[in-house]
Amino acid sequence: MQPVISFTDVAKQYNGREVLSSLSFTINKGDVVGILGPSGMGKTTILKLVSGLEKPSSGKVQINGAQIGYVFQEPRLFPWKTALENVVLPLKANGIAKGKRIGIGTHYLEVMGLAKFADYYPSQLSGGMKQRVSLARAFAIKPDVLLLDEPFSALDIKLRDYLLSMISDQLKHHPMTLLYVSHSPKELARIATRAFIMHSGHEMSEISVSECETMESDSDELFSSRPVTNNLVEGKCTTCTC
Ligand SMILES: Nc1ncnc2c1ncn2[C@@H]1O[C@H](COP(=O)(O)OP(=O)(O)OP(=O)(O)O)[C@@H](O)[C@H]1O
Ligand SMILES: [Mg+2]
Image 1 (cartoon, protein in one colour):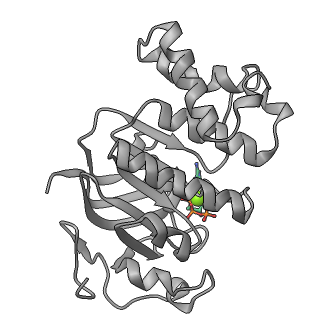
Image 2 (image 1 turned 90 degrees about the vertical axis):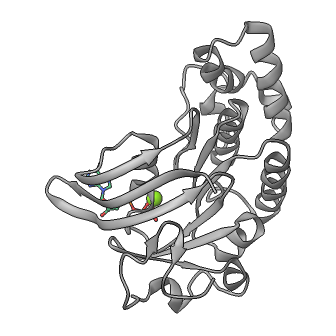
């Protein structure tokens, strides 16, 4: 097993207010990790620490992956660029030739069901369409590590279903390490190989993916505190036998 993401005794404060503390876990190459937990627990903060957008206040965050793709909780598209231009922008930064990047960008917009909207500007797209453009942008760079922060929150059930299948397909063609934040355990169970629940900023436990299959989004399990803290060491869970 090759560690790709390691948190060692990580704490994060914003303006002196502690959001995460004593957080340690390891994610290995190819793991598809779902992160569940109530609002405000620090799930997005974890992804920001992985991406390097935020630095830990103390402790160590180690990442062994060249390319990180990030689908933010809100789509974050450039409003003055079309859907296709938004998708190809990181490819340009990666030095991919114009003809090739247009081909790649067009392909991923097609995968997202947005082929007809390549020339639309974000203001002309619905919230769900914008989120799909940002998914296309992340997949187009073929990242080693992909961070998905509630990517389907603006989408209807049918589209969620389609995109979950699409992500499974993409993972088969291009294996990557994936961190996927969601409020839906059942959704996670469709693609995750490991699942974490954040009980607080210093309490995260690993549960089996099969537990997620039967768990509701408003399950007590998601909102209750567990007695053992910092229970993820080297990817092993100490609170259960999964
Ligand atoms: N840039 C920031 N400055 C100050 N406080 C912040 C900042 N970013 C996040 N926080 C605070 O950190 C806490 C955790 O936020 P975070 O966005 O990580 O939670 P979350 O688990 O992703 O929540 P949600 O499920 O609602 O998206 C919140 O209390 C939030 O107010
Ligand atoms: Mg969040």
